[in-house]
Image (cartoon, rainbow, N blue to C red; front, side, top):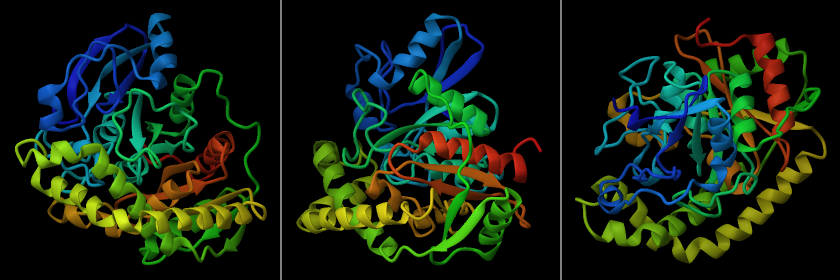
Amino acid sequence: MSTFIERTEIGSGPTRVAVKDLIDIAGLPTTAGCRGVARAALPAAADAACLAGLRAAVEAGEARIVGKTNLDELAAGASGVNEWYGTPTNPLDPALIPGGSSSGSAVAVAVGEADIAFGTDTGGSVRIPAACCGVTGLKTGHGRIPSEGVFPLSQTLDCVGPLARDVAGVVAGMRLLEPGFEPAPAPARTIGRVRVPGVDPAIDAAIDRALAESELEVVEVELPGWAAAFEAALGILLPEAWRNNRELVEAGPDSVGAAVGRQIALGAEYAAAEPAARETRRAWQAELAAAFERVELLASPTLSAFALPLAEFEAVATITRTMELNLAGVPALAQPLRTEARLPASLQLFGPTGSEELLLATGAEVEAAAGAVLGA
């Protein structure tokens, strides 16, 4: 039951959609996975702006909303562990983290309880659980999907995006988030392969093999600003998270879990570094823009290692390779790949602002060549 915070049956259409409990649904409270928020939450007066397409599909008899999914408390984590509502079970191995913060959304589609799930992604919160659970997830470019009615963590970095078992499901999710959405008519042909530090050789090998099997033109691309981008992202995310959640955190551990409270409180210490972080952000965006003048898309691992044991959940930030792209604000797709190990790897394709259509067309090409993972 920890996959969902609240089960619903809104509508009767065939497409089952789950919504992260950070996103307002009219008539239901939004808890953000947090006891302090849940205590004071009233039923939302209106849907979040991003649900307009879903609501229209529900009213047309095309979709139904099956529940609000669990998450890391306040979306301030990447493991999927939640002390108030329980931790969604990783369908690949219950001893492993499901990834977060959109943990319930990834698990719901992985185990077949939803066809599409909506999540949010501030530092990787769609892509990390997609990688841990062997599903596909899209972080949309910052600002493409409206954020009104979505509980904020970091307004500079927050994005809404869909998860599904495969690329076709993510395309269907984008059509609900942005009616009229269609993938590009053809995939990218030139992919820049980015080598990020500390990656398990089995993951790098799976990515290289999948790109080769897809017959894409792959060139090596260096991004010297990658390392600095992670710290700069923290320098923006943490101060904004502190400003958004300070009253909750200061109310004490009966309102916000102690570990999450300590993490968010770091934002007070990072505040002095925020102006420099925003300068680094501008430089990083320029570096990526220059790279996209040479190649259509870039490819890297979503995670540098396979999903961690639950006992090691606090180390998850050491294996993520996602927050750097939130800093840039560009869209990114995470999709599973077979490996020589027992768990799938996750390929992260990312492109310039407005390239969601091309990312999904290219992701479909990779999936067709390399094969889907779940249910294979």
